Length: 279
Image (tube, rainbow, N blue to C red; front, side):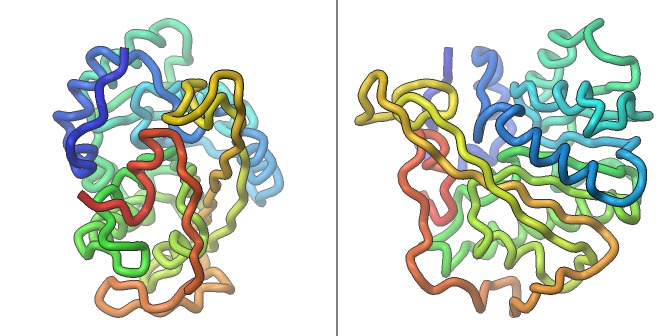
């Protein structure tokens, strides 16, 4: 059973909304399943200098299986990380995820209730931070259009990136799975104050009617299939991206792609998370 779409997209920012939703919803994979993008992050990490990550934080895991998959992936989490913590802002889903995985994962894996904007971790705590769609939720009240973002949304996005940057160890990596296209999202990563080098890859998912969980989207026909492109952002702490030429004043985007770069319509909920959707 799945909770209905809220009346206002800003409700996605409320822990109460997620608590109620997770009481009845058992699973939902935003932006595709782990295996859709796992080969990309395995290759990225295996080609990176240094040992595999030994301390891992999964942020905003929800009722996805991604956190458990990351913890069990020897090519991502070092074959048995010293610590892999799976978190979400909803106490309901954290408890359900922990109970569902009890006995099936290493004792080094833990769960915690965590607000991604105010993380209770010390500086330089993690070698790897992974999130899928959680950063996108911070933009649901994005503003009139992508070129005129809501200042409050920008503040939230930078609060999150600042927390990720703070808690990453030197040479640590933030991996963000998103439907936000690079000409918008890179403006955030490349802002002054962050010392990381950002790379981007993309992957596609195929689904009936365009829904990432196999549902038929509004207007779709049973048996039809659609392909959707999503993006993987890698931000490795310890340098500045050679392409970080974007200028920002007072938190506003002042430069970027000026053509129509919006996505096609996604499934009913992914579309509501589209950058630029406002109440």
